[in-house]
Amino acid sequence: MSKMQYEPDPMGSYQPDDCVFLLRDLSMQSLEMSNEERERLIQSGTHYSEMLPIEYQPSEEYLTLFHKTLTVYAKRIAIAVGVVAEQINMQKSLKNLVLVSLARAGTPIGVLIKRYLKEHYSVDIPHYSISIIRGKGFDETAISYIFGKHPDANIQFIDGWTGKGAITKQLEQSCVKYNENYGTQIDSDLAVLADPGHCSSLYGTREDFLIPSACLNSTVSGLVSRTIFNEILLTKGDFHGAKFYKELRDDDVSNLYVDKISNYFQDIAKEMRGVLVKRLLEDTTPTWLGIKAVEAIQKEMEIPDANLVKPGIGETTRVLLRRVPWKILINPACIDELEHVLLLAKDKNIPIEEYPNMSYSCCGLIKKV
Image (cartoon, rainbow, N blue to C red; front, top):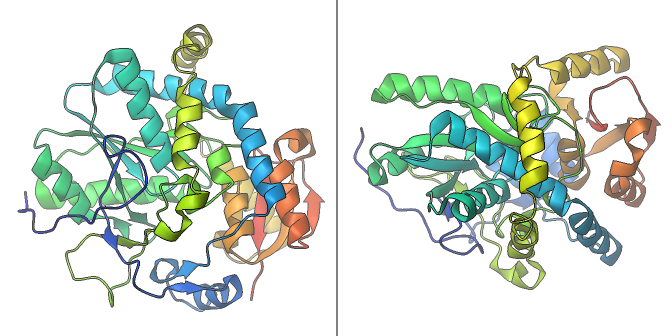
């Protein structure tokens, strides 16, 4: 195992015992670009991780919608968190367990799983949040840091949701590479709150429902930006980077979000067990149903690049917040889940098209520029 050379920068607005970000703070760097400028660069070959979108500043109407959806879905999310946490306990046990969430969509879910296990099992499981970049892999320095702190770590990776499964595959490749290089036996199983893509065997639900933390960016993820891998700014062998948006503290709802959901943990035991029993009787083998739906959309809409198709509520929201959308496909059977998507699309004047033949509630299509 390589010797620890770097210490991460203090970062994030969560309580210190909720999460430790293993990142390098690049707050002093100017990396933000307009969605249109970023889209041109990404589609001409620049890697998305080298720059950042301008943080979306939501309207009062949109923030009201966030709080409304959090109130509506908090208990449902708490049940899904409990189902995931109990499966982690059954499969890995809590001895030497280390939770490693994938920044940043996975971070709030990692905090919630840690809190659930502490409340129900009186154990304080370490929780770190690390960077993983599509096409680059996870932050090996961060993984080595974890093993430096916890030599017998039994790592459980955590994310918010699945889309096409690109990060699931990237995680598998990263674990294989790291294990070969360092003689470790890291398990690449990814625990997610929602698995509409059917590419994980460890999930709270496979329903493509609204996870309110998908509605916002850094202000619901500890004031941390999307992670950055820019070799001009980072020393070789250092942690991946991110920005810590301290100036947005007045708008931060990161702790409000996890507090509101974790307040339900004492009241969900009966409902959670009912879901868990059914889950244990199901065949949870990934079928990659989601990517099949994406391939069908790609073919029908004559879209040349699968990276321009972003399925599921979480990914569609990201398209609307930080990419240049072409149109949004919605499953009319799921219209009640899509209020914030419809509001964002209306604000940005993006066409909406009904598309019932998919396993997702909606799908964002990126404009070819």
